[in-house]
Image (cartoon, rainbow, N blue to C red; front, side, top):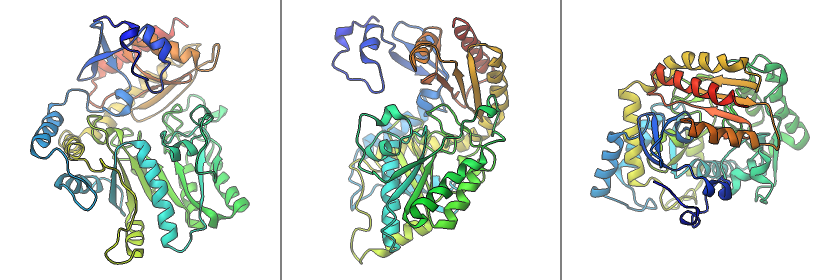
Length: 436
């Protein structure tokens, strides 16, 4: 099927060069298993699991049937002073795989909403503790925490922030964890744990008692897979404990088996106070996110409110939407019944072997990977991001979808991939990159 530019003009596309795209569109009309089909009938291997949200592959009938059944049974009911059964069932399933004592879940509709919700939870918790002076937040350079106003304020990626004025001015950023001496490190780099001491310096400079929370992606995903140095996350946890600061892990990309365990917190053996999640929560089949918190946080906020009153003045029309919950429940059941986290862990070495075999190519500046998540960073050529944008397009027409941020291509294969699919990804990457 051909699409003319004037038939596409009414849709203002997100994070897209609209003018360029509409001249030569790349439109996906079907997804099945690990493959997509474009509007010209081409077959495209999904090398980034959509936007890291479809690890079970596309076209899962179990999820579609669960959503269909739910729509016929109860398509919607408010979640303010009412509830539907699925939200409680899904919360129970999630807290079986979150680390103890993280046993309470607040449902939202996206990763961006989960971040803004976590910000509010942190403020509400400290206020309930009698520490309302904790109004400062700490993020990191090259951080991505969604695009709502709170997440934009936390952003360490300048293009996501420079046009907008955040409403959370008390934010300071630690240095990112990419170091020249760690190039082509596989897994956790050896150098860089001391970068966590930026947080200690902020405590000395601003007063630890003024900081509400520290937001970190265990692996900084969207900026190009910055894997934490050995000892780095542990050091952050210790500094937070020493100063009464909440540690928030943004698990939107890392969660649900991507690193070989339920969440990065278990893989790296560092338990945060709050976890945000989305994407693979429903295998991308319905918009949904969630915030999971330690028991103490939930109990402190709810206990501080007067009897018969709302404890937390926050929520969304679609929080815990029945069809999103149905998709989430079906997705979690597949993870369990098909041992998907274990399958991802078993495939990781083969995948990383193939990715790191590309390091002989002159156009590659660095490769960083852990589990089924890896970035290939290209040497810049021309304006920032221009090369990455062109390679992403070239890859698509060569039959491979890979998400690029700047010059970093982020590869995150579906868990259902076979070794032959990994080989195909590597071959298409090598073939396309050889044209640079």
